[in-house]
Length: 422
Ligand code: PLP
Image 1: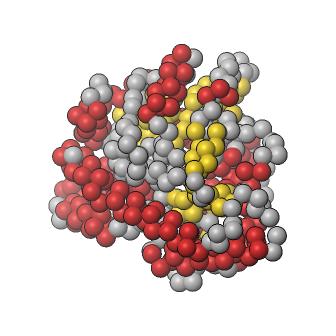
Image 2: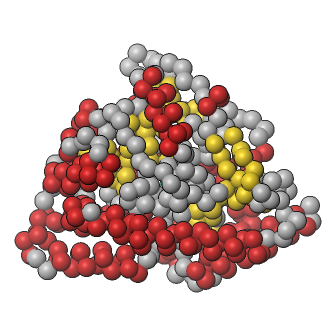
């Protein structure tokens, strides 16, 4: 009815992330027991963890004054000062980083943190220049792909692929292929990476941080699944920070996506930018997530929950689903699963797939199984004829065990038939 501005058109467009969140919401809302939702980044409902959130909400609800403050007060745009203090103390204690609350800012989830950061650092500048964000390794998180309000934002680099045994592989950053010209405004990656579950090693991360410092640009590291919380990381790595790094965390993958709480650790200048953008776009953040986890961050209990409950849960799930895939896919199918190093997904590479991953997604959807076609995650690459882009699917393993198992059986059946008739 109304013509849309460039901003309106860009954000109101159909996007990969839009399609994914719609599928996810529809699947949850439908209550259809035959539907196998292996698509979203929805965290699992781990009973022990859900019980902690219930207990915390009950404690707050039992106190009328706290409830009134919880629901009735606006926070400052950077977030609750005591919460930011407790976050800074936790990272000082755990990793010795010299940070204070001035290095911490809250956003409406990691997604919003990236929307604000990516558009503030790159895109169109007042003097007409355009700058991009370098993705040192794709596939990378689908949720960044359509966030730009001014045009193409990403410059991506193909990874090296290491084949391991008959049915495994791993990506590595191809440092020789990284091009950091004057048009690169920042480097960005998720660790663990959504979708592949790859965890960039400490050495690779240090190398990237050095490159970023040398070029005077920030390195953005998205720790949505990372250490120390929710800690869904299966490799022996540790978080790193220096003043030219911007780290994002989130309460979502702890099982609190409904609270929409992101936490950014960065140089105070970036923190102030984000707080200013929060006030313009949203006035303030949601109080609830910060209120629920504050005592658990202050006591460090959140790290125990992450290490002792959340990480083992997902690690066990990952092992189990890999076993199911191995048992159901025909041995003649040339499949490889990315080494499972963290997050909620298995990344399945079907080399020589007779149809595109997007067509496979459609076929599976018709059979009641939702996965995500891998092609969405290769944004920022020049158009080329790299078949790998159309040969992968992302499988989430956070739904209930019977649902994941049935989904895997149907997926394997479809894939087996495709190769058998090729
Ligand atoms: N970053 C990554 C890698 C993710 O997978 C997600 C969600 O799936 C997000 C960021 C955003 O999550 P939220 O906005 O719920 O913190």
